[in-house]
Image (cartoon, rainbow, N blue to C red; front, side, top):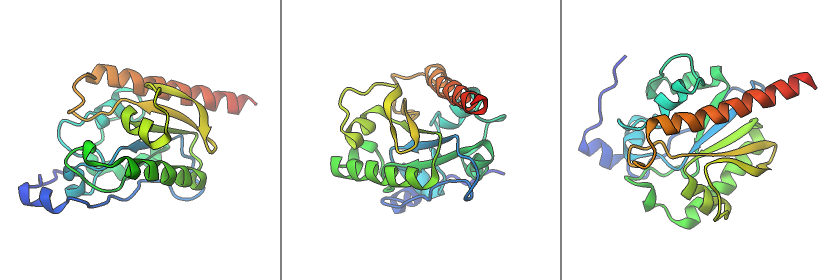
Length: 194
């Protein structure tokens, strides 16, 4: 199924639009809740997370082994069948993440904590270290596992998969997604062995 690409008017009309979370039904396991910074205008126009052409989220998810095939953004509803969910720190669609205020990001961190308490993922992975630093007041955070937890969930910071994040190649992003997947599998094995 091909999706029609939004035009300039569609993108402008999407400014400020929110996208719903993709979560499993109550009682279904959630291995990782993936958290973007906020929807792009392209995502706002299509209603699909990480939908902008050039975003490396979907290829990284597949190449790291989280999904058995490359999913298209319009197939985001399939993620719960893989034990995955998606949310954003801030719901407001913008052209660039730097349009968000620090207050919005801090409020997004609080909203994320409340969502985690409700859906109990094994891990929360925020895709964007700068946004994570602001949202959680952790100025020295780097990519990878974080000390402590967010409610019941382990914390991980992934590189922002946006094509605008040129300092991270797809191969390097895939490596970080794969490190997270390995940690999830190790955690599940420890839990099953307990």
